[in-house]
Image (cartoon, rainbow, N blue to C red; front, side, top):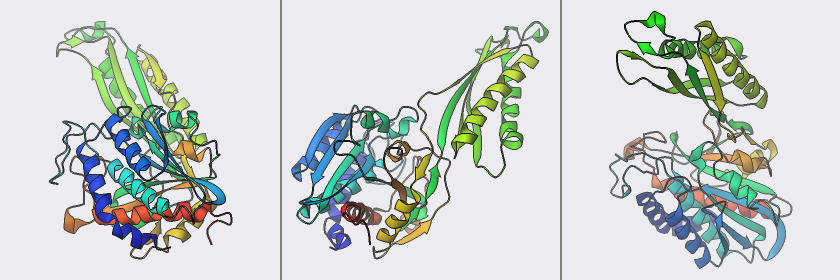
Length: 396
């Protein structure tokens, strides 16, 4: 079967779908119109559909005519709170909301793969599950966890799971893959510094939480520079500082919002412990106190199964006009990690950088653009993975 040739034949449809979704982005947990479009398209292909999964998620199930394994394919659906400033004619019609991370392309490619596979259900071994997931951008509970709690990985139990992500910094048509850890655990934290307010002309009568916050911010960088093994990737960032109402008033409280990014659980646990100890210790030094809180249900490290990843790479190398390259792990987070805790699989990338078309801005940029010529490759890759891993013998 030549899935790429078939994907080329439906390429205009894939692009139209992507553009429709791009014009109507919806934020995490509010993907009502998006999930309706997805569910309706799957049903039109004769695929069994379950709606309202994990909130606004959609599960499609396609049973092949031959016995085999269960393969799950996932696409995320939510947009970002970004005002689009790109120059495409199909810009977002939703004020302040944009598909700035390519989730519109993920859905379009997976719907394309669903069309390809539905045409070959008589040759298809096993079962394919199409997971259209909300709230990947949430960063905490996310959308994968409620989908899993709603049973998408069971009945029948998933044997392999795959997720594809468009990547603006990688060359168009290039697949990026890696066995082992590929995305970080993104742990958000909040440090509430409790001081003693007063007049700006008499700082000696106060415990200035803003002054203390400055020292906490600097000291926290020491966790990375002097407390974590330098060969272990680690990032700590304080991204927001909240305090004060007027230039001559020393407030009672300052709050820091930040994130740490780690690629293994041992470093993750140690870093969280040290962040709390350092923040509280610095505050005590200046007569203040601190309350440190980490977001519950933060995404775990995304760990691709090495054997499955290598076999998947061998499948993708069969796609003409593309390349497969090994990538370095990133410190961005991904709740695809939760599916990988339930079944072996791999999370991989498809490059869409094309300077000639102005596709040079990174994911999450208000000017983010995608080289739509690569969408056919993504659709074909997902169909091929489902088809070959569904075979009882697996990829050859």
